[in-house]
Image (cartoon, rainbow, N blue to C red):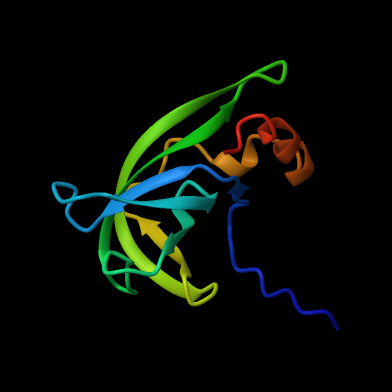
Length: 129
C-alpha cells in the first residue's frame, strides 16, 4: 500500500522572487527568496544571521505573487502579510527554509491559477529572477 504524506489542502505556486520580512516592519527589513506560496502560507529561504526567523516567531512579510491573465499574460500582485513561523529547516550551514502561516489569507489561490505545475512553470519562466 502506498502512503501519501502530502497534508496540504491547496496546491502551492513554486517560484523564485524576492521577499522582505521583519519581526517589526518598522525595523530594518531582511531579504529572502520565495520558494512557494498558497493563499494561507509561504515558504522562503534566507541567510543564517541574526535576522533569520525562528519557529513560533511573529513576522510581517512583503512579497509579490504572479497573477495569470488570459493569453499567457500575467501581472504581479503585491501583498503585506503577518503570520507565524511554523517551521525552520536547515538547507545548509548558510541558508534556512522558513515556512510562515498567514493570519489573513491572500484573496486568491496562487497555485490553482494554472491547470498543472508544468503550465505554471512555463508561464513563470520569463519572470523568475
